Image (cartoon, rainbow, N blue to C red; front, top):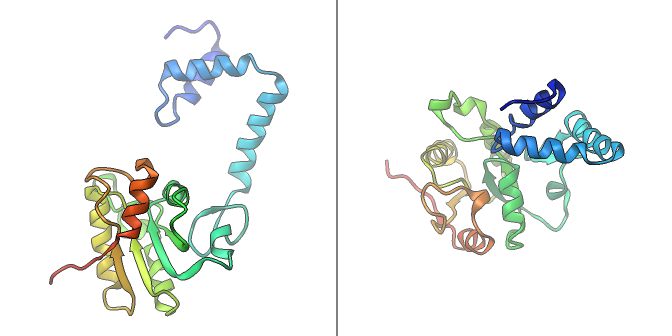
Length: 203
């Protein structure tokens, strides 16, 4: 792609680094910003800068938060004995949109994927084990994507928790194999959580 300006080219190259954004889309976004007022562009820049500088992660569940403890973990009406294990914040948002879940969460920060160099120690699994060992959690729902990486992670977590006094369940397979939680429609996701099944692995 030929550019008439080095500044334009640099901006397009930076935007095209975003997931799912090719150079044509990046160019369209950059040209759109050029047509906006300086104040609107500064507002976007300030929002992104503050996001990177000030964002925090909940010390309890690992969710993205503005404070030390996120709104879900600090809410008195949430069932703290029920913990839903998810890959990242996008999955929390998807589940919350169903308005069918009243427990709390635990964010792993990814899935076990040896091909990508991601092992159990790279995820927020030990913190989960510590939470369960407090005895306050009665059930753990494994709400991970129906992929090879998701199933591998579920199996690993099950092995870590199976000797602890906690019920372990997984969402029903209303989610097709290979599907990701964040892309599931709200009705399917809500039913998958409501009809969750006990998880067990024969020795």
